[in-house]
Length: 593
Image 1 (spheres, helix red, strand yellow):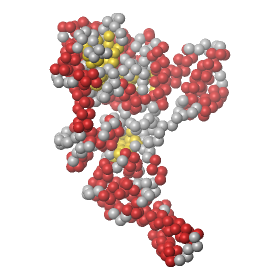
Image 2 (spheres, rainbow, N blue to C red):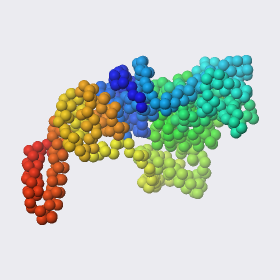
Image 3 (cartoon, rainbow, N blue to C red):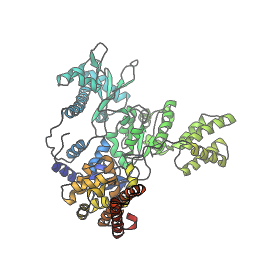
Image 4 (tube, rainbow, N blue to C red):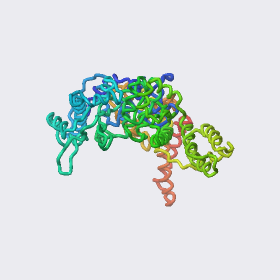
């Protein structure tokens, strides 16, 4: 792979403030010399994600992930190192040097760039059609029936796809895009007979963007009563994954950070009305069930949510499922049920922003919502219904992670079911104890448990005092590193040909993901895990000598078992005596042995 020059990488690193970069997606608060927030890479309720501006590192004590500003962008955007460097250079206005790349890399990058440009052209095309005479009836529909203002229509970039067979396809072909690129984009469909037509025809077009604002897909709403399906969405493409996209987040992420909660709605027009009402931190799920990936994206901005789904049975069932999914991802969840059987779109059109704000104040904790909904579905005057109600709610209670909240829920449940609190609490605890949970894969490097204090001490000092540590590190010989979990980290540091003060950043670049996470984990500790680096070096030499002594003892035992007491055995015995004396003389502090 073609590489950026080291001088350019260093320039980008110097310009890229890691607190500012991480702060784009994580709400950070200063805590002493570092900044803390909720980890964007796993669900948590208590902040364990630390960012150190001075050292240029981040580390999560919960899941073990860590690294420098480039590693953060790699993990956050799921891209490689070179692309992370490019992303940060573009953000901080640093000119990018020309690079040679392989044909395959150029082809992949060119394809994704072409797909983005195709969507840019499509947005312009659909908006032009909406503004044309043919779009007059659609403009009337948006303004009068949907109650949207011209400003909202512009901000959402809503457009119109006419009935014609392939107007967009022809426009894209004239601009130099290939037929294969058009089909890959999802905007053109290839029929069984080989012919190609526009995917969206006679539809209201709603662009779907990443949280950066880049349009990557469309939702098309039918304009005729009998037109099916009512909503036709773009298929998944190399630049669009539905389960990882939250509609409208690009417009409201600032509001989410400001008020520290999110209102989640289902549809495009639900979002449009809530957004138009002003100042509400709203996102939509693109008309699909909420996914864990969407919840994880949302967690980058807030840990509190209010679900505002349709009041019909399907909508309330979706709210129930979404509530439990969000709680499992570490969210505090409320549920907002609008009166009169209306969805957010129709409710706001009738009652305005203040009416919606008033209902928002009366949103309920999700457990109350689940309890009331289940109670309404059962006649609790009958014993068989009460048993069914209790059985259903015990399953909910068993999934509540906080024991104190479980007990509070038990009291409410007992009151509803007319059963004593002690009985319900006992059943809930039994259900929680018996519930089988599947633990997520551990992300903390497996080698970390086998790292000696002396190794950690050297790594910590390499980051916090590289000038003083490098001279001691140079005293370690190849045999001293043999068998150490951190051998490659220390060896790589020895081989660096950079100024000592540049060692931490240069070292991070050259390590594997697992090694980089270990380095960041150790560096994030508030104080040195071990004493001075010179004693750490002594301790590692001591480990080597112990290992060599064990080898000598095994060989000596073998010869003695064979009855060999000749020169070879005597030489080994003499060597063993020398080694024992050396170990006694070298003896490092007990905690480093």
